[in-house]
Image 1 (cartoon, rainbow, N blue to C red):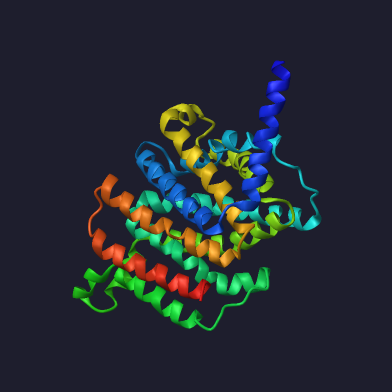
Image 2: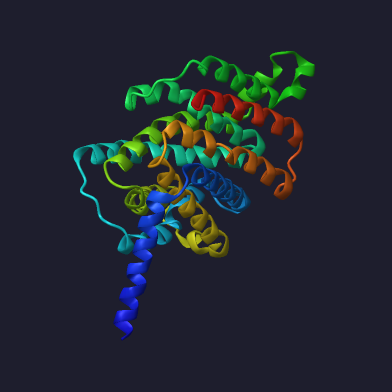
Length: 310
């Protein structure tokens, strides 16, 4: 009797996941992904003062792993081809580099300064999407690029008192911003590779297996940087677990959205995480000049939307 009840719950859960894999709206999924990503960023910054960036980088994926692996018994295992494995082999080293630089960026500089530079990834995708997936930019691309550059300028608009080029010099002095620009470029490559992997597998299968695999690959790096000391991994489990849960939800919603829409559309909506991140910076970390940076971020996002949607 108990086995019959368990099988019934299992089948209902499986049917629920299969329905939502094909039926959910890509825009709502992308917007949800943006919120979960920004929440994880804020929690990571909260934990960084007492932890090194390598630990928090692994926490993002390592603590997401249990939540993602729960999906495996409830989803269909697709037939994998060589394109899937090529995408995985290219993704893993790039993701590790991006993770480390991402954590360094939000540790060194305010969230409201670093996160807006993620809006640059769709601009880099003008070239990477064409090269990897054969996707080309529409006629509004130039206008979108100009708006994005203006948005980057407005992030440090108060610095113009020292000269019109001073905001760009200020960006150069912010190492966190420079790291995030590199991350934006790497993400412009991995976003396309991720879609390739989803197309040649399935969104839920890729979501459930990719981050767990990445956490295993990244673990030796964590051991090396922590000199073999792993006590810190469980030092703030009440803070680290929500980070993992938020990343798991962001991962699932991202790959479900990618499966239902063009990658450029998904990434443009996902960059709404920049606005959520700035609001977290204002409310949680008491960061200053938020109004100035919020305006700049909104202009950058408007540029991204023009590039990727119109």
